[in-house]
Length: 381
Length: 77
Image (cartoon, rainbow over all chains, first blue to last red; front, side, top):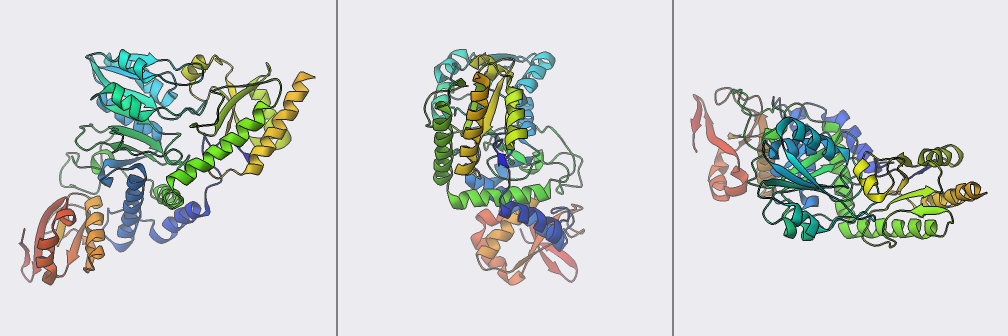
C-alpha cells in the first residue's frame, strides 16, 4: 500500500506517537489536574509537557499562549468569532479552506462583517501588495492560508506581515505546522491555528491556537477548567480561558510525542526531506504525456502536495483506479477549498491530489509515478 | 503550600522547582484555603527562603503561599 494523502492526515503515525497514546491510557488516564491525586497529576504533567513542546516548536515564548483544541477548524472558529464583530472588515485569500470560508460567510450574514477575498494567481501565489490594497480603515483582521492544501504553495509570511502593518494577522497553518519552519515570535504572528494530525504527526482530534500575549480574545466555549471552581465566572487566564471541559488527553500525549520527534529531527531536516520528496514526485510526473500539473514549474519552497489531471478524465475516476488497481491512496475533488480551484481554473471537477509527508519513502513516490504513467497511457489509447 | 491560578501554573512551578533540585509534591488544593477542585504545590517549610529568592517564573500565577501548622494554614505571602 502507498499512502499519499498526508494533506488530509498523516499515516502511518510514528511508533513514538502510538506508544505515547497507549501509555497515557494505561499509566495516566485520569482527568488531568482536576482531582489532585497522583494519576490526575501525571495526566496534567503529560499535557503540560506537550504544550511546552508545541510552544517551543512554533517559537512561542510562553506556552500559556498555546491553546489546545480538537482541530484547526475549532481554532479558526475561535479566532474568527473572537476578532470579528458588527461593522468589522476582514481580508482573506482565495486559497482558504472551508474552515475559514464558512465561518466568514456566517459572520457576514449574522454579524454584518464585510469580507474581501484576495485572489491568488493561477499558480496559487498570493501577492502581499494585493492584501495591502484590500485593507480599509475598518479592517480588523487579515487571514492567510500558510500552505495550500490543493497546490502546496507556501505564503510569504514576513512580506505579508510587513504589508498589513499593525492589523492582527491570523495564519492557518493546518498544512504547514510541522512541515515548514514557523516562528510566531520572529514573524510577529498574532494568531496561528494548527492541526495536530497532519505534519505534526499526532492523532486526529488534536490541534490548537497560538494567541499573541496581550491580544484580547473572548472564548468560544465556557465551562469547567479545574481552576477557580468557586465562581461561575470563566477564568480570565490562559490557557484556561479557552480550554473548558475534559481535554483529549490521549491525543495530546500523542501530539506531544510527534512534536518532540520533529524537534529532535530538526526543522531544516524535515523541510529538506519534504523538498526532496516533492522534487522526486514533480520530476517523475512532468515526464508523463497527457498530464496537466498545477502550480509553478519548480520544486522549491512548496509542500510535497501536487494537483494534477489526466486528460479530461474525472479526478474521482483516476483516484479510484489508483486505489483499486495499485493500492495507492490519494484524494480527488475540491479538497474543501472551492475558491482555490476557481483561482486555478479547476472548478468544479477539481483535481487529483498526491500529498507526500515526512513518513513517505522514495519507493512510495516511484510507485505512484509509475501507476499514473500507466493510467495516462491507457487514457491516451 | 502554594496555590496557583491554573493547573498549567502548578505544572510549570513543579518543573522549575525540581529543575532547581528542590523537593515538591502536587496535592489536592486544601479545602481550608480554597474550594477549588484542582491541585496545589507543597514544599518543605525550610525551603521557603529559597522560594523567596527564586520567585520569578516559579511563582507565575501564584495565588498565595501558606505554611501548614497544627492550627491550619498561615498566610506567608
